Amino acid sequence: LNSLRSECPSLHVSIRSGHSSELIGCLQNNELDAVICIEPNFAFPKSMLWHVFRQEPLVLLTSARTKEDDPETLLRENPLIRYDRNLAGGKQAERFLVNLNVHPTEVVELSSILAIALMVEAGLGVSVVPDIDSKLINSLEIRKRPLRDESHRRVIGILTHRHSIKS
Image (tube, rainbow, N blue to C red; front, side, top):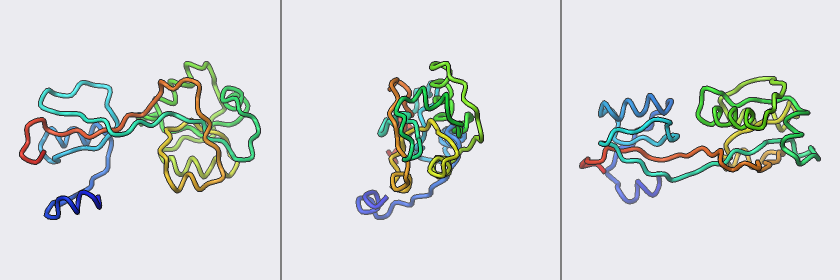
C-alpha cells in the first residue's frame, strides 16, 4: 500500500474482506475494481484478467519441541488442529490428508492460521496450513516442516476487468 500510495497519491483504496467467491461477485457487479484472492476453482469470464503474485505451499506446523521429522508419522501420532475446510487452503490440506491416507484425531477446526499456530506452539497438536510467511507466526516457537508433495499450493492473485480505464 505504501508503494501504491506513493505512485498514485490520488488513489482511494478501500479494503473489503470476504470469501473469494463473494468478492469476485462484487467485481463482476462493478462494486470493486480489483480483487486480491485465492485462485478459484472455476473459470473466469473472458472480461476478467488474472495475475498470480504469490504461491504458498502447504506446510506441517509442529511445536518447536517436537523431535520427529516425518510428516506422516507426526500426523498419525498427534492431534490435528484443522484449517477450515470451507476455505481454499483448508480444502487443499484435506486433499493432502486424503491422498496420504491419514485420518488424524481432530481437536478443533479454525479459519485463522495465526490462531492455529498459537495452538500448535502451546502443544495442542499439529496442523497442515499454507505457509503464509507471517512475521507473527515466524516469531512463534514452532517448526514449519515441508511436505513431500509440493503440488498442494495456495495460489493468490489479483483479478481485474480486462478492459477498464482503472487498470
